[in-house]
Amino acid sequence: MLDQIRTLIAAALDERDASQAAVEAILAVAETEGRSDLSADETEKFDAARAELREIDDKISALQAREIDLVDLATRSEKAAEARKEVLPMNIKVVSEEKTYRADSEHDFLADAVAAKFGNDHAAADRLARARDEALLDYRSTTGNFGGLVVPQYLTEQYAATLASGRPFLEAVTQVALPAQGMNMVLPRGATSTGVAAQSTEGTAVTNQTMTESDLTIPVRTFAGQQVVSRQSIDRGTNIGSILLADLYQQYATKVNVSAINGDGTAGSHFGILNTTSVQTAAWTGTTGASMVAAIHNAIGKINTSRFAAADLIVMHPRRWAYLCAQSDSSLRPLVAIEGYNAFNAVGAGVAAGYAPVGSVAGIPVVTDAGIPITLGASTDEDRIVVTRRADVLFMEDGSAPVGLTLNEVAAASLNVTMVVYGYSAFTAGRYPVGTCILSGTGFKNILT
Image 1 (spheres, rainbow, N blue to C red):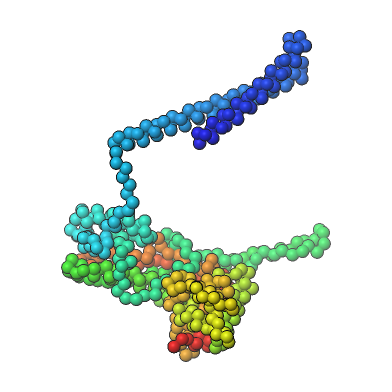
Image 2 (image 1 turned 60 degrees about the vertical axis):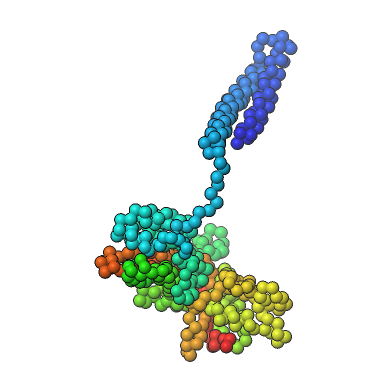
């Protein structure tokens, strides 16, 4: 900044030299001719040049004042740095700090929670507060009814009491914040567009069509689970509470995801994408991988035709992706080129296991999700493939979800601790239903055995 100011000052001084030369040139003409007065034209030019000179002088003064301020600030900063070196001669830099609650920590999260709540343990309360600040940096989890208590991140990273499929689908679609109030979100949708047409002849009426809209109501749903454990298990057990909390969290994530895929809107479930009204459908009734790919292309074409925009997400069950990756053409060349292998006729590409998305078909990312049901169809042995646009599928979740913890004082009277995981969310694929196409049919009976 200081260098820029000094550059501007130098430029302004050059301007001033030019203006001063113009003033002196006007006076020199009169002096050469022996006149004491300027002509009308000379007077006009002289006044203009003098006014310009004054403006430049004012600009230079302002820039110089700014320069003085910046020099003063720089001097003060240098003095402060020197003073800091005298007070702190050692150059100490904190690179990282261990989390308050870890798998190998001497302090137990739930034991501290009980001690702070019911034992008025200030040290435990301080540790919980510090853990809350740490968690807010790592994960958007906040509190239940326990004054800012947040579950330590290592609980969900290190323990898995049971297997759960999680929520790959919801992580792939558009996520927006759930409004702070209300149990129904109303999303206006255009129903009838305005009209535009060629004017038949000059002076005739132009097309007039009234735009109309309809409201899409998206219900806010609550997903929650609880586990009551004895205080003795918390105080005397080893990581019992940690394992239970991790399992509650995984079950929450899985159940919300499954509901967003296949919920029917009843009993507090979401209106899942498979059951959304007016989504498009396409059939796969073949018995080969090639016919499956053709059905996917059919779905892609339907979305492009009706939505006037391209699909950018394919979601399928892991068994369906495994089936496609196992398919080959008549020359035994794989249809899906897995990372590290070449296939000249590949219709898709895959990556090594453990990544999301797992690959692509027709250039569209593929995400596998075990939350897709495999008991559909007349014989209850079929799964489904979802082809959609991420922007058209909305998942709204409360900022405090998906983890909350409540220590119930009533349960504490029996030396029990109630752990509750909960969250508020809303889901819809109905913003643009034609932006989604669901593949179904007898082709889904084809699986690897």
